[in-house]
Image (tube, rainbow, N blue to C red; front, side):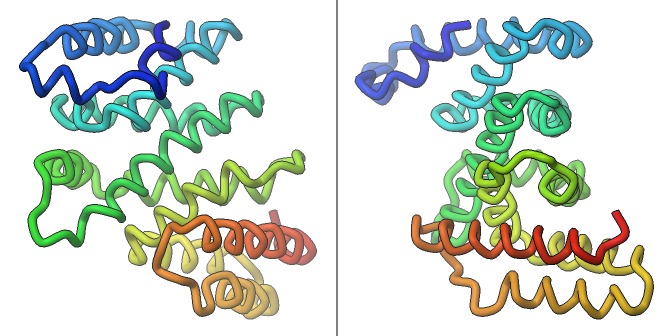
Length: 232
């Protein structure tokens, strides 16, 4: 998988479009075709393949969202769902790669959705997500579950996409919050509501580094407090 080549900061990928050179596009297309033809069972069975597979997808979501946005909705969502499956892996590197992919997607939407003139990439992405309205909610739900159930100490990769999805869709966050609260006994419902309020109180509507760092601190405290009383 040439994911290192596609993510090389010394490459100026814009030059290809400037000169109407389809060389890069052709390579990206072939790479995507290879990825999409690999059975999901094989991806999860072979460790080296797993990391290369999700590493390549992460580069596409980080550097080439414009290319992904031009795919059919079913294929675009197949890649999103692949990240959803990867979040449930036991491998921390895979989880981190998938969390990064989801964060790239949500961050791109947040940073571009309110511009006076939407780019074709944003329009395409929103069109894909509209075909499966529960997609962001499912991602957010799995991210929260992973954070709460995980025995690891590195929560940073998970907090980034949680923040970006919350900023993109408060509706998804409110629905997730209501679902989680409804599963608890009355006494814990009040406690969980309080913890959610603390998590988002005066939350800055930005993805600046300082905001991300502050949110990570809040999520760490949220996890610690909720695990102390919540029926997991």
